[in-house]
Image (cartoon, rainbow, N blue to C red; front, side):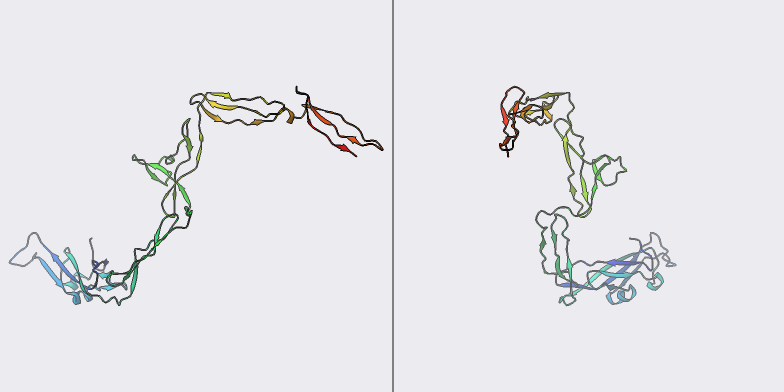
Length: 289
C-alpha cells in the first residue's frame, strides 16, 4: 500500500485467545542503492517507535474494539525521515480480562430457503468467543422472497449474468422438441443470489401429424375426437376430447306419446324417442295435471 502524510489507514491485529492488542510498535526503513560515505547523503534511514511513542505520533486509536485500529501517517518532517521508505506495524499484546465489552462475530441473516446464524458472542478486545451462536432455520416450505431477475449467457464459458446486453440469450432456455419440453430459462433471486428455475412448457413436435384413436359416438356412448400424433416421434402432440352421444345431440329425437290435459283428465308431456337408428325412448315425460 502506498501512503502519504495525512492518510488514514486501518490496522487489524492477529486475534489471540486471552490476549488483546494494547498498541503498536512502528518501524520505518528507507534504503538507498547508492550513498556518499563522506557527505553522509543517501545513507539508509532506520527509525523505530515503541508503543507509547507511536500512539501519539501516529494517532493510534481503536473504534471501540481492540480488533480494529485507526492510524494517521504523520508528516515526514515530524518523523525526522525522508519519504520513500517502508512502514512496519507490529501489534503489542497484553493479557485480556474480557472487560471491554462484547461484539457479535460470524452473524448471517436467514434469507429465502437458506440457513442463517445468530452469531458468536466474542470479547471486543481479543476476539475470544464467549458463547457460540445457533443456526437460524428457514420456515417450512420457504421459497425465494426477493424479486427474480432473468439470467442470460455471457462470455465463452457459458457463465450467467442478469445483464441482457450480452446477446440477450436466456440461460438454460430451451425451445423444446419432440422429446424435450420447452423451458423459459433460469432466474436469480435478488435476496439470496440463488438460482431459481423458470416455467416448463410443452413439447414442440415438428410433425408431420396424423389423427388416430378416433371413435364414433353411438346412441348411448360418447365418442372421441381423436389424438393428433407426431409421426416423427410417434407421440401424442395434442390430445383429443370426448364427443356427445347421439342421444345428447339436439335434433336426434322426436317427441311421442303427448297427451293434452282436459278439464277432467290429466295430460302427458311426452317421451323422447331416438331417430338415429335405435328407436328407443331415452327420456320419459311426466304427467300434466
